[in-house]
Length: 297
Image (cartoon, rainbow, N blue to C red):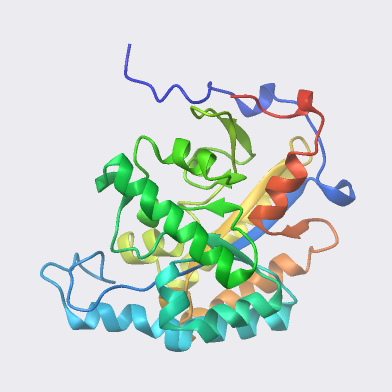
């Protein structure tokens, strides 16, 4: 037998219970925006067209464009479309660009924990170090936002083997780390009880699409439209969650933003047929369903 995570069983989409989202909708749609900050002078990740080793100033400045320019332009687009979004934020941004976080807070967007900085990866931490980091992030956001974050995405989607356990112990309602394998929420085992996995995209995520696969803005936004259209068609048979993940330093670039506007306008033209929502609202609603309709671990 191959090693297993032992946190949930296989479940094929055609064998599951059928339910509806609020308003008798069958497709939930949410947009997540990633706001990140990195230490200056430290090698810590991908550049747009190469792995940045050694560290380069241009890579740091490219990401900083997202905080100074790109995310503000995305906010204007969301205002134009009347969209609330899930904001996946490093706590370093709360100190580096507090007015940007405040702008999302004042819009009523959901603030989702994303570690201290994407320069840190949980998979490289021992359990005690990771626990302290999660405690620090949770307390910091609770103080700044006036409420505890409900959801978590590990930086670079690199959780450790115990991240799920630590998040449950810290009182998180849901986690996005497991969500790339499904289009519905499902329960994941932890050592102190189950925690909900909410879908999160890796294909409709602009960083792997554009920085790794080198898709153009037009190709990426065509992916958004075609993925949405296909999921809307398939949701007649099963309730689904369509997810889109954006990074401020990528899709906040003007030439990409222009194409993104058209893709999101296409989705909003169907707003009466779908549930435009956030990850936290997906989690909260799913947990109110009768137990027999929920996907057990």
